[in-house]
Every structure is written in structure tokens, then in C-alpha cells.
Amino acid sequence: MELIGQMKLAEVGDELEVLSTDKGSADDIPEWINKVGHELLDSFEEDGVLHLVVKKTK
Image (tube, rainbow, N blue to C red):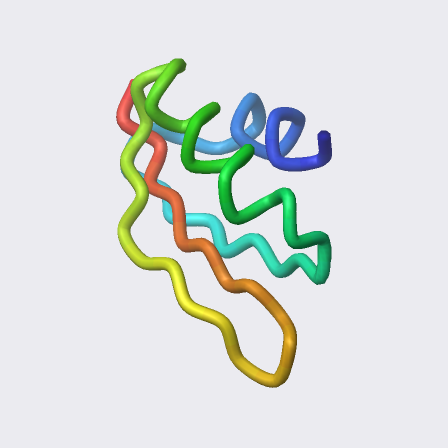
């Protein structure tokens, strides 16, 4: 998953926005974020695209 790679490059406090048309991402990404201890700041769908805003916390 590209998000994992980008989180490794990000600094603590950085915010990343994931765009996905995969319906499974709505469950999978928040589950992973909680598992590893980051923060989901926002989640919404617009024109069939899921937007998830994630903050690196550690």
C-alpha cells in the first residue's frame, strides 16, 4: 500500500490525503491507521472518490 511507504517518509505531524476509488479502502485504511497509532482527521466521498486525511503521530 502506497500510504505505508509515504508514512515512513513523512515527519511526525505531517498530514497526508489518500484518494481511492476502492470501496474496501473505507474500512481497510482506518483499521490500519488505528492499528499503527496514527490519526484519521477526515473521511469523505466526493464524485465516487474516497478522501481520507491522515496525520502521522509517531
